[in-house]
Length: 324
Ligand code: AMP
Ligand code: MG
Picture 1: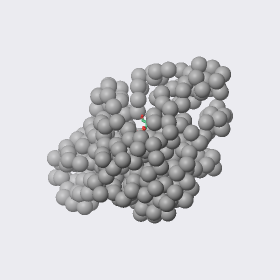
Picture 2: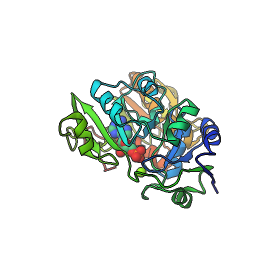
Picture 3: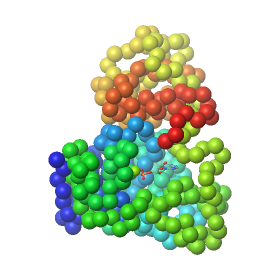
């Protein structure tokens, strides 16, 4: 069962666990977050494992100050104005990711944008103490409602995590509002704890609603995370000219034919495989092979989300697969 520590006692212990790659439930002003070091792929994979999330949707990265935000992402003037007005607070900005951000690709689901937020209180303190951003979706198992008290987190996830930091009931009680600046206009991607009216008062214009083009939400398009190469799933052998995305210690037939090989996990460990998924797909894509053969990956545990992402990458381009 998870240890529960009051927020005013928990800073050092939480930071130590996070530095060691563990997940910790932390209070934020919105809802309780299940936090992990956003620069550590296996730590981020534990978030999905702990929540039992069947999909690798992108997560919000939490920062302690503007300097950290600027090291991770590029803030245009309008995004900076919103950050000045509402950070720390329940507003998340989707921003272009910097090349050397250090953010692990599992946080962004391989996208070239990142969702950033500066929380108030314990969330910001623990990020500052750790010196690294924290990925943190709501601290509840997949499909359940977000937890707004430490007791609710304990009931739902207590057997799966080492530490729950109790900061009392969360003041906002709703997830953050997510916006993205597009060509000088602000699009509301998800309504949340900061009202649209408050945002609009600052920008002086109504926000754009709904989705741009066909992309309703990240991950909704079947091919959203697709590499340029074709993906051939559950391959039993490698065909000439193909690259190979491998899994586990044993190779499929004719693996020696592969023009490039990347193994998601030599040991067959699904957490390691999840952490490697996006970077390995990208690496093989850059090898120039027109097709990537993919060895079978088990479907249990994190394997469900890995297979979901592989199926999206392999799907015909621009066809919706399933909703998030
Ligand atoms: P949460 O589980 O509350 O952390 O939710 C994170 C939300 O942020 C999800 O709805 C994601 O779809 C959204 N999100 C995260 N990163 C991005 C991104 N790069 N672009 C657009 N939406 C994002
Ligand atoms: Mg949630």
